[in-house]
Image: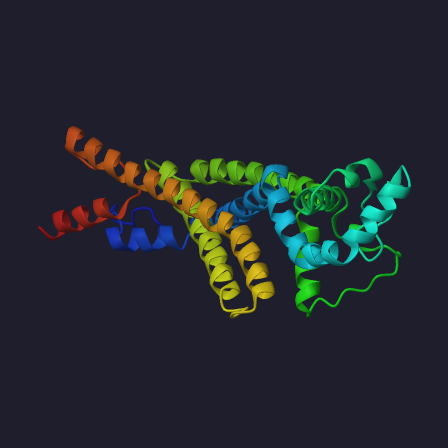
Amino acid sequence: MSGLGPDEFGAEPPVRERLFAEVASPGEGRRSLVAVLLALAAFGMALSVSAWQVTGEATALPMLRSAIASLTEVDRFLAEEGPGLREAAARQEGVLELPGYPLPIALEAREVRGASDAELQAMLLDRSAALVYAEGLRAFDLTGAQSIDRFSVDGLLELMAGQLSGPAHERAGTAAAVLAAATAALAALLAALSTGWSRLRAPAAAAALGGVGAAALSLAAWAIAGQFGGSDPFVSHLRAIAQAGVSAGTRNGAIVAGAGLALVAAAWGLELLERRTAGAPADAGDAPEYAAADEREAG
């Protein structure tokens, strides 16, 4: 007996032998490779879409205001420098310098003269957030030679704030578009390599696996972030910002996984309905038919 064809007596090989031969065939290997690549593309797409959403202006600016309020201790800055700032505003017109403030923010003398401390704080935070969003981490470098300790709390917060920027948003959008196109192309390829209802089921299952991975990774990051900070208000603030950022990955990963699993369930349901309607298995490549054929051979 050779291959999957009839032997010299014209008899077909046993059904289980044909099944195992198909699983080990080069075609099945190609299907498995494409399925793995599709899962990875869906994984990356879910995370890059999450990054694109988090770094969008509507989401990023409030987070930046919160981060900058902790990083600059703006309330303490205004308590110490506010009186001198108001004296300078009473004596001169034009732009006032903000000595000791870590970002190059400008305030007009006329704005300072009529503003309360709360209004000055809001102006500082709004303009600081807009500057960091436009320039990223470079906004904190007033001298061009700044070195940030990534392992310090201040350094981590500064690095995080620097990632909530317009350039990061553009990069995330490009990555999301590329990975979405790759996901669609790989899903179409996997469907072409499949048969019957597996054309829907196999791409959906692979995409669901990628979504589960993205959700699991984001959830793990959220849990790890929750282990830091204790009762320190400053670090607790950093933790809250980090958890708010990674929660988008959990949400989007769950959406991808849920959609994929729904399509898998729909494919199984439609296949079962088709079989019952036709009175015979619809997909010649599925294992249930081989089991039925074994029973017929045994009989």
